Image 1 (spheres, rainbow, N blue to C red):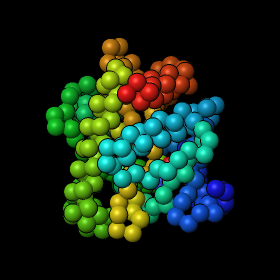
Image 2: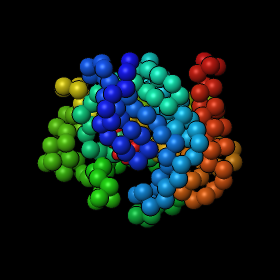
Image 3: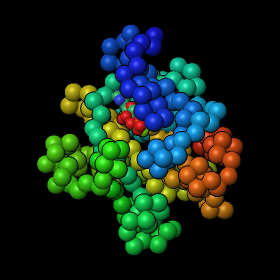
Length: 239
Ligand SMILES: Nc1ncnc2c1ncn2[C@@H]1O[C@H](COP(=O)(O)OP(=O)(O)O)[C@@H](O)[C@H]1O
Ligand SMILES: [Mg+2]
């Protein structure tokens, strides 16, 4: 498969058209950003660690009946995906209070959330991704009521599957963000599921194993991404 034109250059990935209809190539670049792009760096190999973990999760989710955009990896930085019309929503599932939930609402960091919370934000950097509610999502026609129900069920299913997988590696899935897109009438899980889009805590030490290491300068980001990628992908080899 050949990479053709650059369709979109985001903060951490670039999307290219290909010579195959309905398929795109997503390049996981080594760029890392935080705080609405206010903090930016390029860290060697960051892209391939995220791509590897994403591919691994998409594969696992597919085996468990979740429809994802993932086809295959071309090389450690390039993923072949189904071309989707992205829905501008960030679907966030939270198992433990952390991050913006603690900043914006009176939750104490580390409080378990039973059942998990689903929060849906409008993906628009210029508006700082404001939180939506079901009525706004439907009024803006981002999703129909039945699609919204399906998206929420899928998000919880992804949470159940990935929480279990990570727990087996001694990692707590604190929260994560996913994006969905459409091909025709079918909604697929798109984008990525990586250390940039999840919050992961070591079960034993409580140490951050995700982009919080970069956000808050908690340690050597790449050493941690490398280690956590190995830890996560090892879980398949054992099964
Ligand atoms: N299967 C897909 N088809 C089309 N676009 C996609 C697909 N998966 C992800 N995208 C989009 O590609 C972009 C990936 O680049 P990224 O750096 O994450 O961008 P952003 O800064 O917008 O988050 C995102 O805007 C995402 O919504
Ligand atoms: Mg993104």
